[in-house]
Amino acid sequence: MKISQIWGLAGLIGVFYIVFLYLLRPKKETLIIPSTYLWTQISEELASKMKIEKLRKSILFFLDILIALLICIFLLGLYIQQTQNSAEKIIVIDAGFSMNSTDITPSRLEKAKLLAKDYVTKLKDDTKISLVVLQKNTNIIYKNEENKNLVINTIENIKPCLSQTKLNDIKKIPKNLNISSKDMVYFGDKYLKNIECKLTKTSDDNLSINNLATKKTDKGIFTAVTIKNEDHKAKNVEVSLYTDDLYLETKEINLAKKTAKHIIFEGIGQDTKIIKAVIENKDINQLDNTRYTINETHQKLKTAIVSDNSFFEEKFLSIRKDIELFKTKPQEYVGLDDFDLYVFVNFIPENLPKNNSSILYINPKEHANKIGYIENPAFKIAKHPITNYLNDDFNIGVSSVYEKNSQFEPIITLENDLLAFSTVENNRKIVVLGFEFNYTDLPVSPNFPIIMNNIISFLANSRVTDKPEYDVLDIVKLNLKAETTKAYIKTPTGKDITLDTKQDNISFNSTAELGVYEINEKVGETDKKSYFVVNTQLDSDELLDDISYTNKNATLTKLSIDKWIAILILILLTIEILIRHKHNLLKKKNKI
Image (cartoon, rainbow, N blue to C red; front, side, top):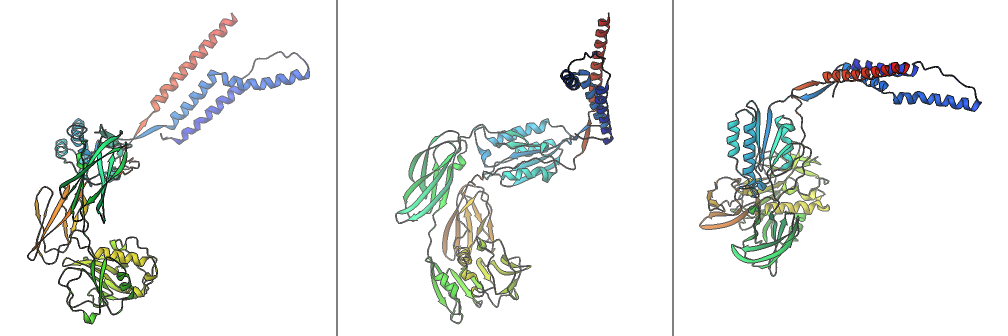
């Protein structure tokens, strides 16, 4: 509530005036009979208390006070400020992974669409409708659309998504559209505070595979399958394991309500390529009852380091058991072509290796983008796989400085220039460090093994893809061999998608299907196959904050309550008149 006339507070003087009149009104004369001094003192104390007692018991007194207060409020011009009905609505439809559940026939999404269409149909014709669909990303389809039929037809064509929705993005919707959250209606299977929800969920009867991990041992591949029970009651769960599409075995466990448990499978062959786990139980969402993983075979990384003096680099590489190290000097380098990783210190060879193996340049003096040197630079660490877990508490004595390029991914920056970066040339990964480690304090700090391991992990990835497993709708970065003349990917449903082998940075984004993807390359006269898998995205269990949002530009109206106060004053005055009239009648009757 707010006031429009502050001077109305002057009416409070009337309250004090009424109290003053009641305290000073004349009393009836009483005949005092003399007594002892003690009785006189007691009578005076009782008399003083009677004044307050009379105030408390007087109905008319309190009526007068209340009327005076109401008159004061009336003079203040009290009103309620409210947002004018803007005829705006935000329709939010959740089309995420959980909406594929079938506890409502035919699915939660179809029920949500039906409710949303009915809701839009009942809106007034001049209502401005904003339609938002929640999938992997939050998609604003319409903003302030007045054509209800267009909105209804669009809702009908919404398709389910196999990825989880980002719940915390929901609270940004009202602010992005500049519409109050009270005008937003959510159609989905999650309860959201402070907005209207049309829930489409009747059951939690769902099991899911949350993880499928493998580890190689002397006795074969050790596999752990993590099963989650989302239901409110315990379940007996049967889980089967398949290797390269061949059935291996089935195990049964009892899973308590709202818990997860691991099932262990052992004795899987070392040469197995693809492992699949399947929950055999039927539930409301079968899509998360299957999960895949790739069993990768790792060989020693053949590494050639070409340098006159690289003590720290050589020492670190030589103690790695997974690296087979070869050392030579620049003048002795004659196009070594059979290594997986090359480390060139202080020079760039005239002829690069013929294969597309990765290269680490350490302070290459002849680099085309080099623009000078700097001592004790005030550098910053960029976000990059090589800087994971790396602290910036080290010092660089001297470093080359390189001009930025759109093809360079920064690793260590210096204002608008670079001290270290990565790039891809002819499908070859390259990392350039502008400094030698013996001109830094890295070798005597925990940062040295971190940055070296990160560089090797980044460059030594011999896979065609940057990792073996992806979530649905993820983008897959491909690293085809330089000599590849033809390549295509076969999707889980058998569709062949041709790849452009002439591109350096190939991205594959057709990952809407769950299962195993097969990459086929034509390298010279040889056909090579590799794999990656796409699984359902794990539920992030995000916690939503308050979604409340008020449009500051919304039209405000004042709801005056003056007439109701005036009516109340008249009612109270009538009551007081009736009480006083009855009091006068009693006085006349007593005189008679």
